[in-house]
Image (cartoon, rainbow, N blue to C red; front, side, top):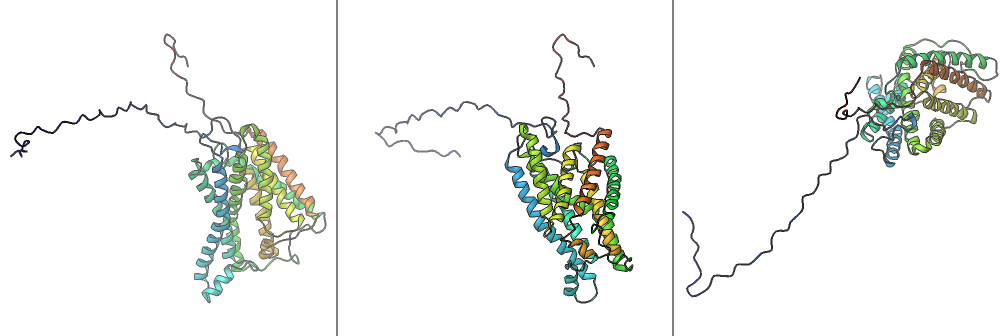
Length: 364
């Protein structure tokens, strides 16, 4: 039943009807669609050291990325090392705390401590992948090269060239005083279960460790510093990035005398420069892997792994050896890269042609 409301009392007028203003008129707003960027990250051919200058580039992204990588280098590597030591101690004989202490002691390197060190540094690959994907919206493969992917044929060739450079290094070093690897009294070490385990760790994880250092120093850090410079100053940014990453790489190895610092600085300079000349990390990874194989292999067979990892002094004569190896390798890599016709900049796809004007027939 419909509810009835009483009218006004007899003799009274109904209340006046108020004239309310008409509703406010809002003109229709034109819809502004969000800009859509092409799937390819770069608007024009871009060298490796500026690949973070994508369509969505802003200056603070590389700066934040560098801070995240620094956190990863200091924290993530430590966490991975401790986790490996904890797991290894659980399977070691004797007291758990004693076993953990042995796993974390670098004065006498054990297979587990070497594994923790290598995997900790290898985790830098994942850290840089995370940063470039989440912060810059780029696929991780862009860190490897401008193609973007690992150019396996070039990488395999660089491994061979690194062997040639190492042979030249050993040959020159044998002619100079105090430049050889630490081989103790020259006798072969006794082969034990620990030796076999260490050899297996070196064989399987040293390439990952070397790649981790290359991805964080010659990869993301080189890109981030180079990308802070505008395209008009790309060449200046390249050299600043090369020098800064080389210095950081040398300093990251801790206490060292000048010849050893120069050795690591020279490696960082050559590896970074080759990245800019070849458009990828392959040459640096190859030389890094072979260098570490040689150092760890000699120490495991004739010397002491702990001394090799904790080395802080080398002879001044080693500078000659370093220059020999770096020079031979650089010349060979540049020659091979030129012969292979390596791509050194990104190649954005050609824009699709628009529809043909009326009356014209498009031809293939």
